Image 1 (tube, one colour):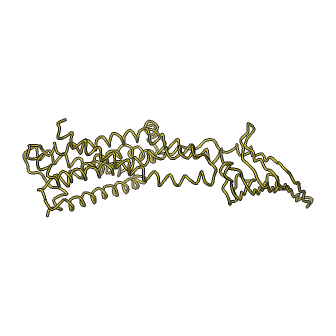
Image 2 (cartoon, rainbow, N blue to C red):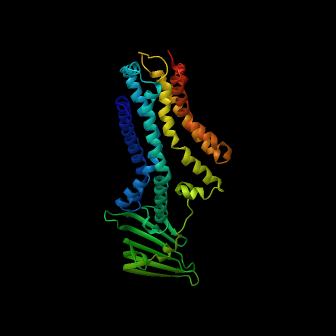
Image 3 (tube, rainbow, N blue to C red):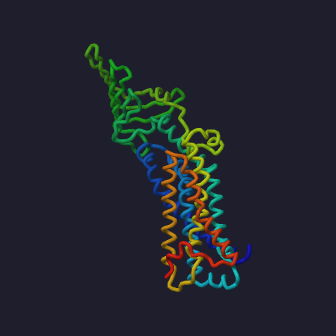
Length: 367
């Protein structure tokens, strides 16, 4: 790699990393706020919250990285043009391919990163996140009691809690237990706490009343207590298995189930998606490199590059949704993903063959 190529590549790579980190962090923080409810209202630990937040990070990196590549290439090449560095590079004898090479190298690095994410980190994080989410909703359902809400923990058990104190204790409990429909039980207590024991989860309560109404005899029995324990071991009978979703399956598992249309679509999304990073690097090359130098700036060409990138993303979403109903559009997903890169190679070939470079998308932006 010569010095000029390394110079442009290093700048583009640094900007890509910076933009990627900033965008990913911003989206991650916004989405992580949705998990705060698990701490504030449902009593889960901060450690568990942070673990869940980390598990959702790869899916944002997968979306943000192609955008970061595009933003970096547009910024760096527009800067090179504005400061006349690109003119000097051309005057020194650099070909179209040599000028495009640093951008394509950054796109290739993004593509490789996305393939690693698609083949391992994304399914692994999605699987771990959904497994933990399933476990919280079922096995740990007793820990998900919200304040001021009638929480239905099972078909026969309802729990209301006025609030939680700073220690996590439950204040103002109302419990309705209809496991025996002929003798429903209503319990009220000033304070309580959820605990896990070897025999199963329990609610420990103090200073309350237990009332049981016998529908057969019409009698109401009442018992005041200083301490009382409610057995919630039936909550352990929640389902322990669930079906894996397509985004949780590894590449080998997808290849083993090619008779399933949803999994075929998922497989092709994994294979075609990372190619977008290469195309996002190629679009600015198509728009900014061809054509004459314009001292008044590159605003029109940059806008066309942005519009083209946006159009490719919209078409990709449309084709992906359409592929779920008909697999015949899957080849179009690859064409849309790799098309700009093929055009860059053709542009460089024309230039190397002595033909005048074609302005492609930039032609429309010519002053």
